[in-house]
Image (cartoon, rainbow, N blue to C red; front, side, top):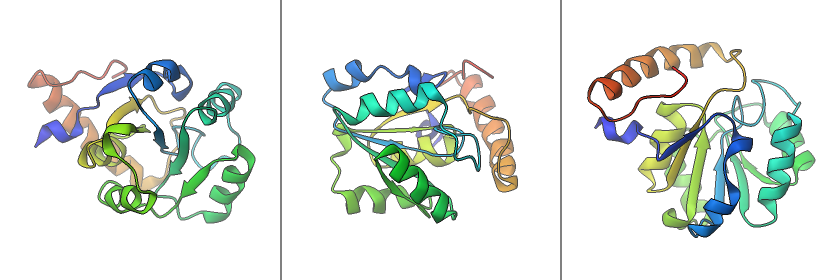
Length: 170
């Protein structure tokens, strides 16, 4: 059961993920978490390195934000600004199955990137995609996420203790 929380790989930031390596592996779709993966929580500001990475990604991949956010106006603004698809109210991790089906994705050609084990990584693994855990871009987050982070800390401890995964920044 703990294996569902083990990412395929990690990166310090979204912008440090090697797009050429993903292309070489046959990846066609990138599903990206929003808060603390692309932008700080609740922010409309996309860091310059993230914006440049997203523009490069759009040249070779289908790029879609998949977020649990209920702030649809913010999501729509970012989708327009970045020129990418987006899904809100995703209900990750379980809702990622519905999103993948709605988008007609092939799991082996899909990468899920996010900053949380319980929502992003477990969801990506659940659909059979390659999962990449990134370090959160900010410590500010939704109060509910703080509870998830506490559970995540226990999971990380168990994963490390069992030799399954050691998070490089914790």
